[in-house]
Length: 77
Image (cartoon, rainbow, N blue to C red; front, side, top):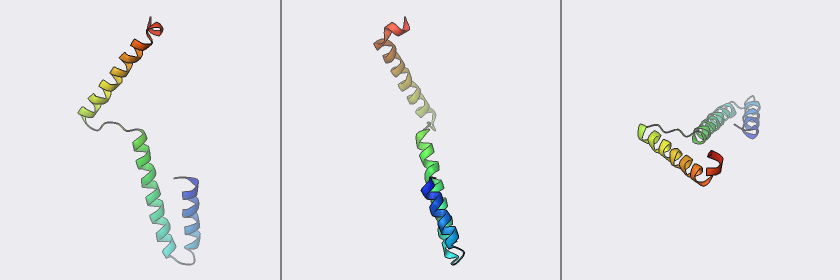
């Protein structure tokens, strides 16, 4: 959750002292922003959830490493 999100939640909490409905809005905004940041982190660290996904990722990595060694053989000798 960024600085703008924290600021918005803070403003809504302060407004909630006059009208308690703003506290509900602040809580909803907080939950929305925290869920969104969690899903962003999961997208960055996308790990396969199945064995087939793991194997596909491992095979892609092995192909990339073989290609890298083939193209830059002088570094591996």
